[in-house]
Length: 135
Image 1 (spheres, rainbow, N blue to C red):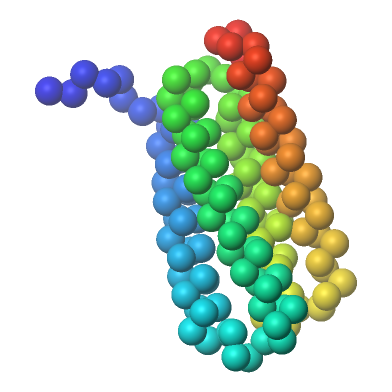
Image 2: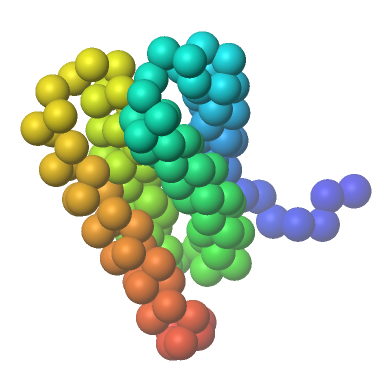
């Protein structure tokens, strides 16, 4: 017997993307540990690991956003925060992965926009939390 309401499209989407982000962070972390640690300088390897860690943290946060999306299915602010987290992972971690793979270091400035996306997402959820069901 299923007593919970069906998941909304955004809840399902955020759950799916969170799972994919966790899976790719796991794969990229393993790749780093087994293939890149001996091929990258210590500084570049540390930066690569930071990108993996941020991807993990934000993927976990996206699970929280999916849960909030289920509890507050009409909240545009929750959906906005979810998309900001996804964009932030692409911009922050993605840029670092690309520079580690040999892309010009000049694109590293893009990572800053990913960090800003993370901050805006979590501050948006702080406002949603403070306002309660009205958000």
